Length: 382
Image (cartoon, rainbow, N blue to C red; front, side):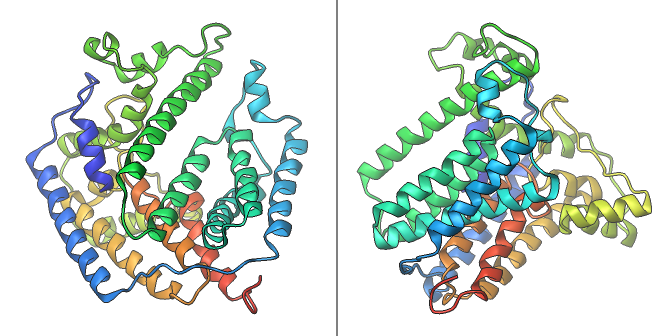
């Protein structure tokens, strides 16, 4: 479904930069769709994944308070609140925010726990939990981290979809409206961010910078579609464009054990491990082909192709299937964080349309919390 969405958005043709999707890539994606669908049907028939409610958790308020306190400490450490700085017209670089390693833990744990709190709210329908959830949802807004915000929202959506027996037409209409609103706001905040990075103090909501980056077609510029949606279009479909260009422009490689080891180090191992191995051995990460220097990602598959050509794509898809299956087995249905873990896994798989989220510690490390915290629970409390 994730790559189908990217393919459909790709067909809008709003950019002059996009190459035509080749038959080989389309066939590969089609085969992965078919295999995933068959495996999904088997999972459903065997009832391997089953939704269950979780009880009231008296420690949620305490843990949420520590999370908020952690962000307050970071605000004191950098001596400003990113969102307020941006609204005041000051420059802000998200890469420099936070207390190094502590920030990675705080962001990943906060995302995981926000999804769990939402699950508790759906299970108990107690108002205090939705208040806590909304409070925690403001943290990525305050640090101006759109990725973290979308991650929490998408995982929460998976929890909600998991909890209902069937989709109602009313829900679909409301869902489409909310998604379009989110895309609009995503584009608006993106315009503001790049305007500040460019040193612009006036007309900071204009889309002319992103139009230049993405080489927007005149037909889109002159259409009635809000220009802010161009951001969503680029984010969703440009990785697929980079993948296609990588396939079209990369040289064929000799398939040997050394290339396989490079592939494992770069694409399978988490980046906090692979970076240290690469630094120790003096290995430089291979770059993918890009339709423009500003758009750098190429789905979960692009770098795999550079290392091993089509074999790399097959191995990457196989690893995705095996890793997901093993995680579900380790998670166990009796785990109170089972639904949260499945929702985070769904989000990781969905975000693979952008880049390799298995190797990205900021995303994959969140899958560890449902496993670890299960062992710290006694009598349904943490």
